[in-house]
Amino acid sequence: MGSEMTPAARPRISLHFAQTLDGRIALGGLRTPLSSRAGFELAHRARSENDAVLVGRATVQVDDPQLTVRAAGARQPRRIVLASALEISPGARVLRGGPGTLVIGVEGRATAAARDRLIAAGAVVRLVSAGDDGLVSLPEALAIILEWGVKRLLVEGGGCILSSFLRHRLADDATIEIVPRWLGGGALAAIGEIGVTALEHAVALEDARVERAEASIVVRGRVAY
Image (cartoon, rainbow, N blue to C red):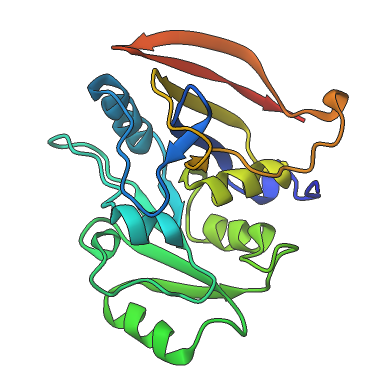
């Protein structure tokens, strides 16, 4: 399903993630760090070049990331979590320090108690309508994110989030680190259903550039629909 949201009405959106040779990003329910040291540094550089970095609730629950840049004096991004029911622990590292964290949930799914817990932990909390998948409406969330002062947004995952941005035709460019490993079919896919029913309708990575990051291969390009 495409989105009618114009680029002027939302931040510029870059996807950035690491995947295996078989297109997997993690073992189910387990923290699965895939990036090489060079890939890790590349990801942190991308964070510093964007106004905010966004992940979903599952990434926070499994990985408990800080979403910061680990370099002295580096520009730190704001942090955004999409969590339909606001089911984020007040002790999550993403809520600590930094220039601020925005958590976006769904009206009717998030309780007042969950909202109050996150506000008490220092988060900015906003609620939007549900999208076509019953989760956070991306167009509504992006309008709030733009109002929050974010003009360049880095989306790191997980798979559900990455797929949703592609399905709604909201990603402008992408950087993928391809790690020379296989995890097999039981692991989580980087990209799930994105509404492609024929090859001619496939989402493309145009003007692609390839570079090395130690043993990994990094592919960058513009997302075309």
